[in-house]
Image (cartoon, rainbow, N blue to C red):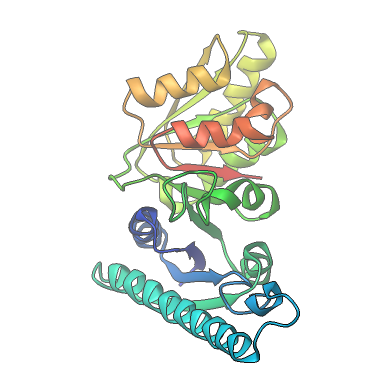
Length: 283
């Protein structure tokens, strides 16, 4: 194996998509898949003592019953976490790939920090187990994960479809150049149709940046076409993805132009929420 990818699964609708994308990535890049499910501290039992909510003078039998319920809930959470991992592993195994499973307790970011140093990429679903994006287990943590991870972050769409066309959003920033470099070095993008787009005015600087990006891909044996398009990045990129049936979007995780707004605050989540294809964010 040349490396490892960590796929975060939570039992939501997006978990199957995460597994399917993990299989696609592992197959093209010869990566080992590690499935990770994180039980929050309350789910694991830590800090979940309901007896504290009972006022002084409550019957000790009730306190004991609540304590027992706490223990049962913690055990059920562990069983559920293991079942989620088993289901995810079965999805990967049926595609002919083997995966390892890890059930962790504690904070999601702490669990990722402890495991990502040995990984080449982190996969996460766009939304978590709740329908409401703001309340889903992974969805509510997506912005935190985006800001915290040091490895490329692959945000899976709701459903997998074969990836044949790739759009690289390029604004000339260091992270955008690293995104191009990642595409050039990664086996994932060999043979795919690649388009590099800069959104903004067609200046000599912008044109030179696109030429440099295209040359980097060309040196790696990848063909790409380039464009400079006017407008707001979120509008232009969203329209391109939708109108031209783009399968996958690659972006730097921050920038020095208007594109930077896509990855700071709520606009970043809005872009990921509305874009119906998987997105790779490269720091």
